[in-house]
Length: 202
Image 1 (cartoon, rainbow, N blue to C red):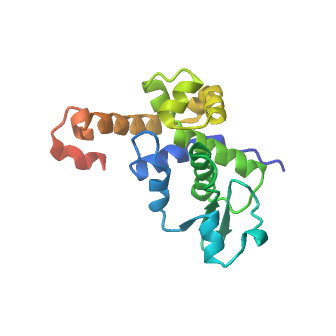
Image 2 (tube, helix red, strand yellow; image 1 turned 30 degrees about the vertical axis):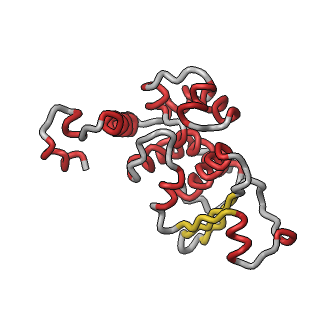
Image 3 (cartoon, one colour; image 1 turned 60 degrees about the vertical axis):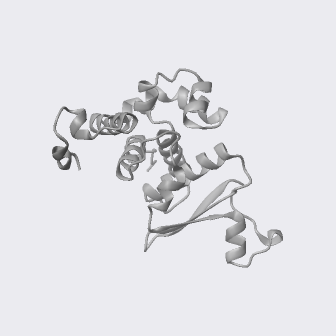
């Protein structure tokens, strides 16, 4: 049986992650998201080598960018990345690996990598922000979301696809939080209610 990537699940998981961990500014604070995950240990390649006493001559990572090691029983992860890459590449690498973690991947195949890419794209370049800021060109993507040129090109090309998969609830919820963050108002105030009604939006 052929298993196809679940782009709807990957897309919405990105927005649910941003909402859960209250990440509403730009560019997205990828390290902030990792700091909130109790089941993940994040290492640079250099830190990983030092921690486990591996010399650079004997360190052969499965990717020159980053990878994760999963304990499928305890659902715990080690995420390692190459900090010598440029910052935008590191940001995408970490967003991709975070996708594997959030989506609960315990295998590393084409399906899982396509879902992780979809998650990363929506995490770093959220569609409500793309539409709200009227992001039109790859250069706009690079400047607002601090992503690489290839990432910007892909995000722009697949924006309509990504928009299709977002549930109305996740689109509205995330968009409302971004507006509140930009203007420094509460969710209750956004809807014309006194601040004491904020607990309704928790």
